[in-house]
Length: 618
Image (cartoon, rainbow, N blue to C red; front, side, top):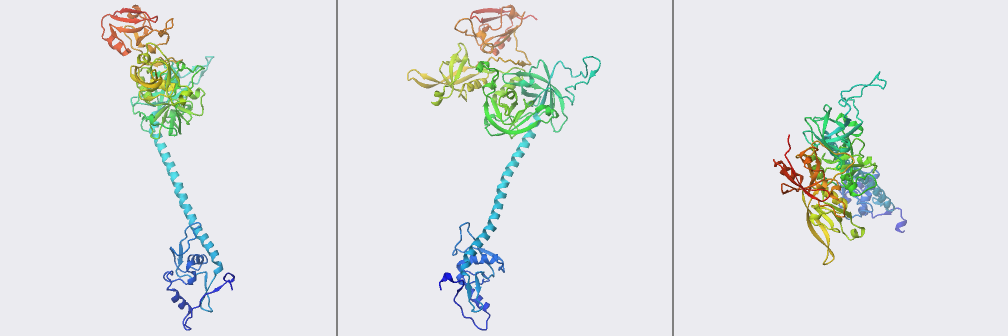
């Protein structure tokens, strides 16, 4: 009979003694099997190559009589379609595929069912192994993101706790309103109205409010100029929690030291102890996607000394503030931020958050929040901040002295490169015009020069050039690198020039303010000639007047200088025969003069005159 048609196949029978139990004979015969564990399992030799399947099958049917032992048998097929199965032996266990023939003492093997046992064993092993692996994988992969999120949360809370002590709420109150005026009469002047709360009252809700950041332990606070507006018309009150949070929150009068609309920065000062100044971060390391936290006073809610915090990322850098009106020329721009100095963040800066702090996860300030861009209607969902870079630091240090900041000026008219030039790989700003007598001409700049580097800063556009020059203080000697066409080869060559930077004229519709008025000598206040309006540089005719470096800013009426014929706008070339290159030079030489002083002046029409100014009589 063919093998495949047999349901049962008879194996070779081994004779056994008549007086001895069959199980003893079978155990003694099978004990010599090299594949049998100790104590030996009962199975037929034909099952050796299927022992893994047989024993797994036996386990599924409940034949196990001892502990399960896992081992690897290299002689057996491993059924590795899904995984490498271990060989499991039961000690002692009869094979479910090996049935004893009680009649003949032999064993009959279920040869046709062994594929079913293989599938069943594979299913059992897979079901026992895969869920365990999945559980391990889920627990491992799930715990790692959670740990990262908890670390981010911890860093955020620590940064807020570190920086919030330095953020204050500011209220702006018109000066004609007295804090002690508690009542006011009705229009009929019979029944008094309920008095408005004083700014020093805890129930006071300001109509004009903003935020500020403490920058020194002696009470200096930096905020935005549009928060301060005109210090000649307003008083200011500051709420801060002070040292040791929570603490008593007290409104303190603040004194305005300076307000500059061009940089949109202002500095106030309060008299208080235990103030915590903010720490500044490195703005040169800022990158898009970096996490930041905004701390401010939206809707005047931070009067309790606790600024509101919001979380986001840096969306972009060097963003441009919108220009007011239709004129987008550089001369019409009233803010340095229209040349691309702002940090853009997805944290929305609400009204009242202007002047707040934008901090990194170390609690270090990297920007000063401003909502002026949102008020102008540009990208309302976005937030913007003034970068707390070296220009920011230089401006506020000068404001702390009660003086207005100064910005560098070269005296040229630049433009962006054309598209075909940029496609050739050129980068920089092209010089269109060079004004005679100004630092650009003195440095040797020519029309069609391409400025690609100023000092250590690369220049890729006209905005980059204006921004780089604004960072430089007047009187600084600055290297300038240009591409220039060489006449001999008609190719671009590189040249290094050096310019002595002058001061930029600032003309804004919003008034600037400085606590300390300009210094005067015998009724004269002087300034860099380039910081005066453009009109004094011009005269009727095609050629401009080559002005000296220093000019008269103002003259006090009935002063010795006024009586001598000195008028605003006149350039000062020499003082007692010594050349004047800066306002500091003028005041240093003038303070040393005790008698009459001779000035060589250049009038706005180009004529040169000499005047003698007598000493001032008190």
